[in-house]
Image (cartoon, rainbow, N blue to C red; front, side, top):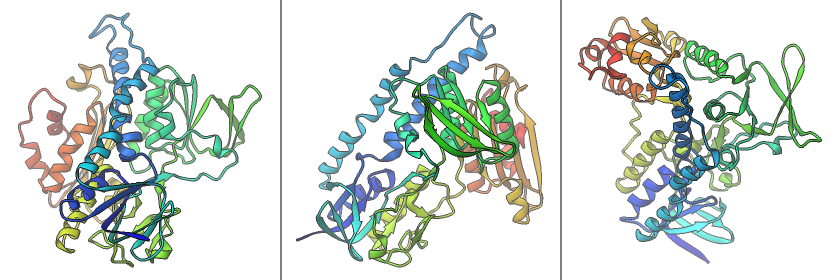
Length: 451
């Protein structure tokens, strides 16, 4: 027997929640998730990660302020189990609160692995469900790395649950996860190594600022190994983990108590049986049209990290896609996502942030531009907080004075980059932005010196 709904939603993250709650005002809605209700961002991603990052920032503030802002003998130490307990005050309420809200809105919940059985039917643990519309918001999962011993890796969600931080850690691949957690773990007192297969980590960020951050990270004691390809992971007799890597010269072994998967995530399409619903997809995700609807099955929409788009896989993008799908389900296909320009932030200490194009992208697109670059470490706003690692690069088109890209490395880069994103979305010229009398002294007031 098949239970019928108007809308079936696979997943319960930010985009899924937005769609479910809005559509439940008019339609019969069911949410299906094989994981905890709430999604990766709230439970195992952005939000809990920032709790750990704040602890690292506090330790760093004290370290760089000794003998200047505070007594030179001052100390700040992270109590890891206490930190994780505090983090859980944010994550533990998510599932019961969201479950209660779904129930209050008469949204049916099914917990289990869903897979398609037809164009608009799915099955969840033997229960058959039918929906006029099915929205896939299953997110992403850790990428498979294909080397012996991969099963010994610790994933990012497991790292966030670790009650005792190991004294030695290795992070595989130098991306968001590796660098953010490496900075946290180092400030907590662990020996940290990051292994990256390319000549430069953090693909997608401004190369010159990445180089500056790498140099600074090394000065903190983080060992960053570049151009190293992982060969295998194994356990030694004393129960340590041995990571074998190959570079241009020779093989080398690294040892640690924990080796963390930091190689990014891929769309979670496996097990959905999308072929049975004639939903077109590939390794980049589900193919959608401008309305976030499947290009091959009009019953199906998709949002978030499972979708194949040119946008970065970030929560604000997923939310915008969810908003678009709500409008199109309720009012018929007419709405397209308005992304503007999407800022990206790496929450290391200091933060690395980018919005728009870098020089390579601007040149390939045919723009004639000028570049403003500088070391901000000697600016008064940075010297006041003892930060010695801070820089910027801004790209401005010569003919129009439009800002093409902004790239910041600074303690408050995550906040300042939003001002550049707003200026670029509404096509303010560099001259117009520079004319704003920002509050002083603030990080934002430095924008006038960058343009």
